[in-house]
Amino acid sequence: MKVLMNSAEIRQVVDRIARDIVQKNKSISDIVLVGIRTRGVPLARRIGQAVAEAEGVNLPLGLLDINLYRDDFNRAGAQAEVRETRIPFAVEGKCVVLVDDVLYTGRTVRAALDAIVDLGRPRRIELAVLIDRGGRELPIQADFVGKTVLTSALENISVHLEEIDGRDEALLDEGDAA
Amino acid sequence: MNWPRKDLLDIAALSAEEIEIILDTAVSMKEVLTRPVKKLPTLRGKAVAMLFYETSTRTRSSFETAAKILGADTSSLAVAQSSVSKGESLLDTAKTLAAMNIDLLVVRHAASGAPQFLAERLPLGVINAGDGQHAHPTQALLDVYSMREKWGGVTGRKIVIVGDVLHSRVARSNALCLTKLGAEVVLVGPPTLLPPEMDYLGVRLSYDFDRELAGADGVMALRLQLERQQSGLFPSLREYNRLYGLTRERMARAGKECLVLHPGPMNRGVEIMSDVADSPQSVIETQVTNGVAVRMALIYLLLSGGAVDAVA
Image 1: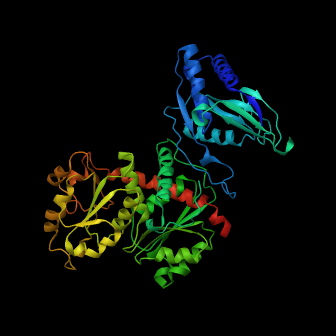
Image 2: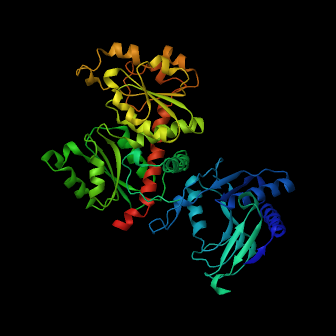
Image 3: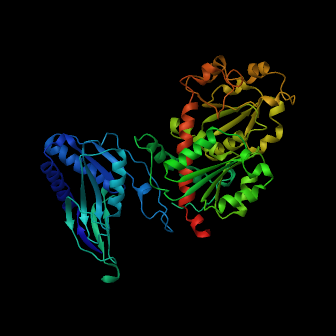
């Protein structure tokens, strides 16, 4: 077990991503944040708070569950608990920033893109992740990355967040590779 | 979460936890119903067939809508125009459908136990959409969903179910479902339609509707099948309405917060008066919408369990 990020680093990274999102998008009133369940949700909320503190603007915040859009539905053991998607605003014409904790194969983001498009036609969709661990199986990349860590399939990254896990840290489990 | 079942035949077989899983999943499904595009890719390539031996409008179209929103294909067997009228047996008809690569069969039949008979003999999943006087589990689930949506939960709530309890699969399934979740259920009706042996359901029986309405959180009027009058089970529609009809005067005993439910189709002016059915206390239309969400949840859970794939 190796600590990739401690709570101070996570805080810095969230603040930096918040700054970058505002800088990249000229019109702040068009930005909406959508956290991918489970740990993308508190991260999106924190990014929203950082933007509110720096700019005095409260960005709309949505919650997205991607389980109805999975591409592995027919595989054994694929059954997943479907939780509520709550996006209480129109995405039409907006800049949707998807937020997730770890970007790996890209399949979750693919599902999230399909889910968002079913809700309307945003002007653009961007992706913010705490950690990009490489290993993509689809042509997908993030616009805002907290930390890039290239890992093997044997390794595992787990992100813990205060709101869900009671503490902030990102861990690398080196598995058999250690 | 683990959902190993391939069939839904009866509420009796479900644990309180399993009922909660279905209802929680239905909350997520209801959000989909509010979207501009009500279509998911989830069950693409799956096929759901309706096999209805009794007439039905809302239940069948509710199942069809639910399956289609989830992305599944649906087919429907109009029994009157099918080989059934040529004397084909229930099992042969179902096997024929199964041979067309159907993944899930939704069955309604006048004989109690018909869906279970099929479920035991076919590798595919079976949902009971009403069998005889036995069970109508999806109706009970959508009723309980509608109450839970209003109250947050049904534990400790008092629900009065009034009408032809004797012949009602809706009353049986609701009594089981509500008591499993910790609600108090009282079954009310004329003695001819509420025999004492109904207490096997573990709920209270009463002939005095007015007394039971006091303190009720919800009241559900059952459809009165008009042909029961010919069998001499009650003297006249007018007398039935006077003693057991849901009228505004009667609702005043229960208070403004008491929910009004009806599984439909309604006999307005018999078991329920129009001003009650259309009042703000009534969730009768919401029940229909919730029916689609609950059936989506069930179809999703049954088809994603892996059990179907394992046998097929």
